[in-house]
Image (cartoon, rainbow, N blue to C red; front, side, top):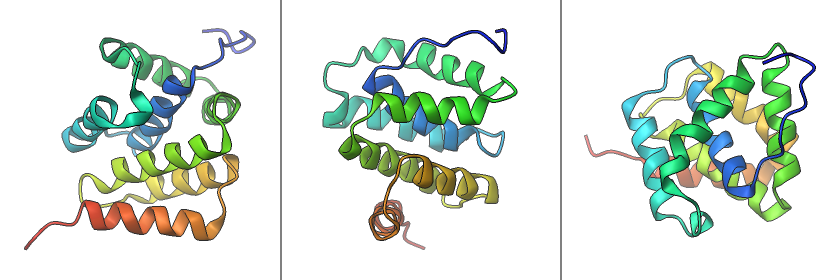
Length: 143
């Protein structure tokens, strides 16, 4: 896609998916656990009521296409923030944290993308810390 091409705005559902795909792709490896977590979130969470679950792969592919641009990460963040209300920005961050926590380890790249997301979505530091702690607790494993 040409660098000067104007991208279509995202729906709030698409923006939430973009947030999850961003962190999953941050380390260039989208693990099965991360992909399953994205699928579970999309099918089970109230924020996705009314979302066409069959379009998940197309939305994820659109995100990857945006990320392949020279300005991809910044463009993706701009699209996400333009589509979400402040409370949905926190939801997007929470879903992204769940994806990072899903495989039991957070890479430096994933943590950096989360930090950028926190700043770009204007999420307060203490709110972000609480969301991150909740994700760690939800994805803890025995043994």
